[in-house]
Image 1 (cartoon, rainbow over the protein chains, first blue to last red):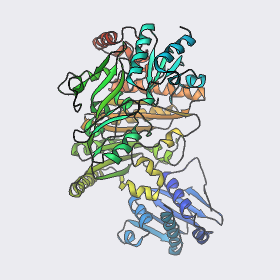
Image 2 (cartoon, chains in turn yellow, red; image 1 turned 120 degrees about the vertical axis):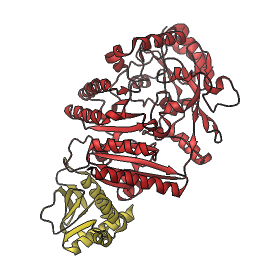
Image 3 (cartoon, rainbow over the protein chains, first blue to last red; image 1 turned 30 degrees about the horizontal axis):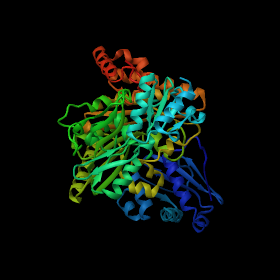
Length: 120
Length: 478
């Protein structure tokens, strides 16, 4: 699955980090199939926001969070913790992570992060 | 002397395989990574032993032929570029680690020894010791860095690299060999420069204008079993400078650095980042914490967290501290900042491969205004505001380095970098930030501000050691 930036001239650090995670996670064909056509998912980290629009054959990353079916956000430490452990219940219960929208869509995003972690 | 005669004479002295007049090599020797251009040498000589260096210098001195020493030519100051042709003395073949004394904590090395080589050798054979490394590729000369007073990742604790010297062996213009430090008296140890008069300084920061260093005793440090590097992302340069000074006061870190935001984006392949979303972090601050004992490590880390919390309470916003091992798991690109020496591919691998900087040593008390002013000047000149600030020698002073990448093959970019560097030095020098590895052009522009007494004394020293002015002419001109 291709990963692209809606505006390559204006990519945030969050955009780069997330693109790299997606690139590694979506190298797993099974995971890529699972999230194909998932739609718009928002990520907020330390005041920055990003939308990942999962199409059938590409994910387009854009700055800001509009029209997302689900979103997740928190501080850099909390999100990195989720990326490392795959666990988001603990940080959420501890108030370090917030989310909204369709939880099943977010679970699919977690599968991408887990695959990225495995890919190293 | 005709080029043919020159080659014949040098060949007779050192052997044909050590003398080159390959036009491509001569042409390449007139430039380095920077915007600075030299003149091609007439010949390149690659000595393999001290006797070769002596023979070449005696010959050059008699014929008043300029001699310029070089190892990897990565000094980012044009310091190994000939300005009047002559002989380029390529020291890369003298690349032996001659001695390592783990108990007395020093090693004796030749000028061609590289940082990567030292790291590999010590890690494999002497893990109880450690050396320090610069933010530079592994293929960088340890002695060149040391003689030009570079900064290392233990410079916060132990000072800039020249302070690690116990002494040098150098060949003077007339071929005389001198040894400084303890080796000036003792044949059995070279573990100290004390109590000898400090003549080593005659070869430090003078860029090969007083002699060619052929070996040196350099200090090693005790290895530490535990090491952590943490990153903190901040949103305010002033808060970052204050935080670093607070960390220094607590004496808990081996190294601390502030990197401005474009560096983070360059790790991801962006060539020259100029756009930043207002909400993005402005600076990355990193700290190295080491110890041999877990309890001490835990204490250092808790002090680190406490100092960071105090900064937060005073209104600063920080993300982290983030363990670099976790950052690497999330994003492998951070590996490039995890350990030194490091491949600087994100700064060097781009069209035209140009890298330049104004690197200064100055008071950390003025970092804030100097960094903000420098970054503003860089942006005004159309460059990303890439700044690196690191405290040195337990906070007695700090480095402030402003870095540019550019295409060396595009004259307009070369000109823009030269113009920017000039503006940066003009702004920083009056604030007490003195350029290190000082390029020739800085002396042309600002040499008149050097204390007349200092200049005269230096002139006398230079004249005494190099009466014919053959040693790297143009550098530190007096």
